[in-house]
Length: 212
Length: 251
Image (tube, rainbow over all chains, first blue to last red; front, side, top):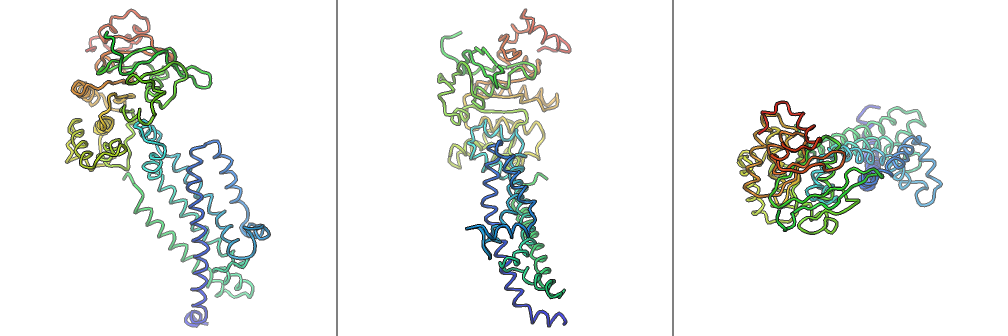
């Protein structure tokens, strides 16, 4: 089978599966950002909570991905077979890099800058929005970038629990020992990861303040 | 001494952290327009005293009055916007231009744009930085002395009645420091701001102070005009003066 035949046979399904894949990752990252960034900010405000919560997020990260998908299936509300479970698992994995980078990024802001801001009469909220988040943005975005690239790779496993995505090709290819099918899943996933990485890199360069 | 209360009054003020007294028994009054220099080695409680005035720290004993009202009764945000604050590291916001740094408090206070712009120009001129040349620059594009000037301009922006300065000239080279001390003295005379300045540098204290308060182990052990300070028989003062390299250098 040459390349032309391959694409005429699988092209439309690659498009469809890529759409599913992007949807899973997109929703998961949106949720992880919506929870992880405010969460990380809260941890900087209550240092006592930060150690145990980061430890839990770390522990989740160490669960083998296939096992995590499996563990979630029997759970009520979160679990079951399908896209919802896959999104939950991807959120759990994406949370740590975003949470941790937000926490470290904000804690990394020069204490003199905080002190000057507070001393000039900024409220904590003003300091956070106008100063800390802006200065930590590079580190926070780096966390989102890592989380996204990892999620795109992990989402291939979602096919194992019936959530679709490019993993469908890979599992099918493994089952019938067909390398071209495996590549039909793996190559678009890799391209997607590279594109996401480049896009977030552009956002970083565009919006992050640099001294030099 | 007049009977009019000072702009800043400490009455038996003290601060403890985890049961350890950091400063205690502070009693002094700073009349309007005075530069009080708190002199002392690191850990003597100078910075803590400064932070008790603008409530970056809260008193655990006694009271401090600002504009004849206990600081505890002030909204801390309002209080801090009435008191300019300059620290050694300056703490300019690196992602803000000089202009925006100076405009910080006026913006927080919701001034009109035209008024802010005029005020920024006025202040940059006041501290000797040409607005046309410096307004759009970022802090990392400035020299240490220029940054220090921007820090002072920022602290003065909303026309506070008092300034708190924590080792404001400490990071500058000796030549620039001398120049800026002198300029600062002139600036202060022109504006009549009440200033509390913290330093460990005896010469700086002698150069800029109206009165010098010597702090040791969390207590104010002497408070005198520079001339009287030099003549003081207090052993703590003698010890500090003995550290001067050459007594003839004393201005």
